[in-house]
Length: 94
Image 1: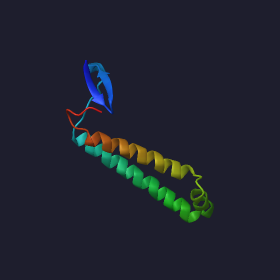
Image 2: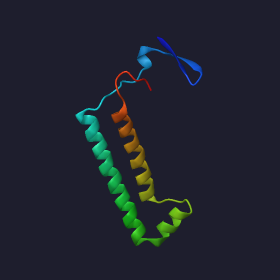
Image 3: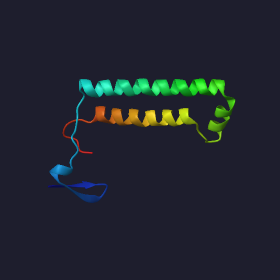
């Protein structure tokens, strides 16, 4: 077990609780590329929907969404996760 200070608090961490850390590999880069492509497709779908349906544009302006905007949000979250995996380096704890 290890103990460390984080934000003024002491945290105890067992070896089993540590996440497996990755480094930049072919797989992590490929995953990021896949998520970028997915994000671009979701963005294009939303842009096409907004161009063809004025009510969608108005809905987005008042904070409501549509299926395409939800898909874009999910794609952005997955892209963020893939980029986080890419940035992780050995020896750094999360």
